Every structure is written in C-alpha cells, then in structure tokens.
Length: 108
Image (cartoon, rainbow, N blue to C red):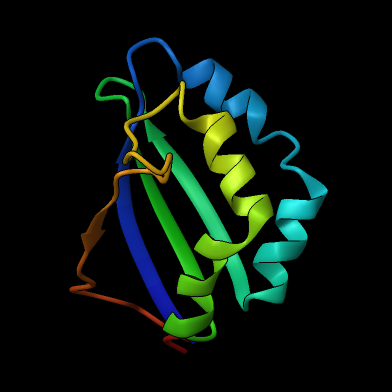
C-alpha cells in the first residue's frame, strides 16, 4: 500500500461549504475512488490557515493518476472550484508532502 499526503488551500470563508459538500460525498465519486484502488482517504482542515491536509492509501500511482481523467472526478473538481485554489482545469492545486515517519503495528 502506498501512503500519500498533500496540502490544498481553501478560499476565504469556504470551510463550511467544503465540509458540507463532503457529507456525504457523491456515491459515484466514492465508487470511482474505490475502483481506482483508493482504500483510505481523509481530509483534515486547519481552520485558521484555511489549509486542507489530505491523506490517502492507494494501490498504485498509475491508478491514482487515472482518477483525474474520469468524468465524475472532473465534474467534482468543477463543483469544488469556487471553494478552493485550483488549476485552469479545475483540479485542486496540491503540494505533495514527503513522509518522514510512520509507526506501524503494535509495540507489545
């Protein structure tokens, strides 16, 4: 399993709308993520900074990258673009983070 972490940035005042749109997430988008090997995906908000920290566990980089070409994903990006910093294609601007520590398993 590959662990990924990245940052995204909300536009001012959009945290509540961002959270509402994820609760619940579109079932068809959830299926796209599952079908592309995403096993876990969490997004955390740093409210003061309006920064989002995302963490995902994926099967492969290729499957992860292929999500971007799915029409459901592109529709999701378009719907989210008024809430966050995005590229011209409406994909979120992300800053990849490097893993520097991971604790796995039990210590007993």
